Image (spheres, one colour):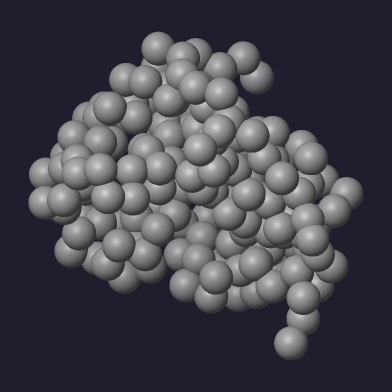
Length: 194
């Protein structure tokens, strides 16, 4: 899918404005790479470049962010605020993932939104997030880091080794296009099991 830098920037900036209204320090330089990554991932999920954006901001904060951000998102985008946190997704991307393993994602026949909320609460939503592994501690998964030339960390996640390169590139593009900057990624080592 061809990415539209103008739309990515527009939605990312709308996310920055929404978060800035909810979190007083959002526009400070503290943790700026992570904040810009959040904005980039919201844009990517809303435009269909990534299946899901999720963060456990809490129901009240998530509700405020949703109310400030909804109008800036494409009509096909679902933005949900609940005790599970803030969710941004498109049904056409999450549906096939949820349907790929109904026993795991929909053990009681849950609809899309309920299934995503439930699996996000457990921290097993890595495939939905576009990471290639269900969780940071998935058996055999490798660590992926996305960073800039100053070694500032923008993202860290785990992926199955067979798809790690693909997911590393895709998540790097989510961020790099938004920032209009060159980023790098590293893959490995395997996540150790306790």
